[in-house]
Length: 398
Image 1 (tube, rainbow, N blue to C red):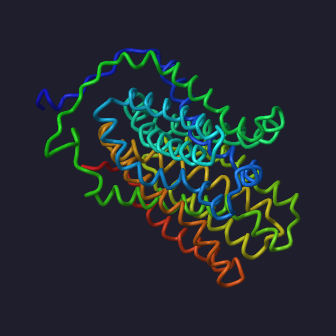
Image 2: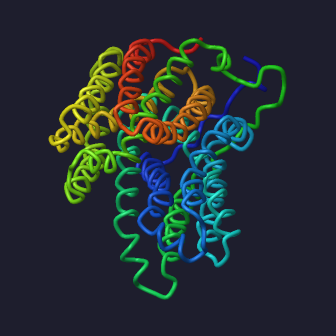
């Protein structure tokens, strides 16, 4: 291997410091997004936007994830993982503050910056796990996925109380999470001293292995990432409405939505504990969509038992996202290739995630029933089982 292709080994740092920084970064991945929903009506009334515009505002970060993710690996190769994370955290803090300032233009601008920043963090974190914790990919991925979910739930839960604390109203909960981004940046700062070798541009931009865009295994991982994202985001978006239309009370539907999120954390932790216990992940990658399939079938046929179906869907969703993110490291030989696979899978995955709830809602409007939308998810779960079986094999992109 030539000198120009040699990557510097990271300087010795406390694993506790590295892990703490990683988990704080993970805490920033969804908090700035989930805080919007609870105060959305106030935002609409204050800046006078339509329901359609509000829907686009909610979807803008997901669209940014899809558009920006393919470019994040190149940025990480040029700047190094830590510097890329630092730049993304700084951008996130700016975006969160900008969107909380007066003026609808700043709201849209800040939301776009937020989407770009989180897209970059999403892609780079699996590569960091691959590099710094190569023997504990599943456990660390589960820990940061659970952290992400905890902060997402916390942000949603405190949004309305925070909005009532001052004359800033909804602008306070939308901007306050910039503090978490700055804290994560401060903890990450010691790692910025790590030496970074900038890879020269050339016909072979990947220092190890071939491009994932040319690999069948990478497309299997990408299919798993995308299909599980569609199922989860459709349920997160529409489950309360589906249940209300089926005669479930608003209170019960709210409890079921909480279970969907809360048991997602349990599913994340359970899957991360199971990953290293198996020689490969085929069984886990099939079990998760089977649980999804059972949950969606139950919602379709026995919605009055929604507490069971929401719980199963939460466990399946938490487990499948940890598995999808773990594949970024488990199916690659090097952290640079892990970043490339992460960019590919998350780009396609979040494009599908953004389109899924829209397609489900459109089917409901066209047919007057949620059954076709739920059947669509059932078909996707069969496809997810197949993708999971192949992605779960003990192989790497060669």
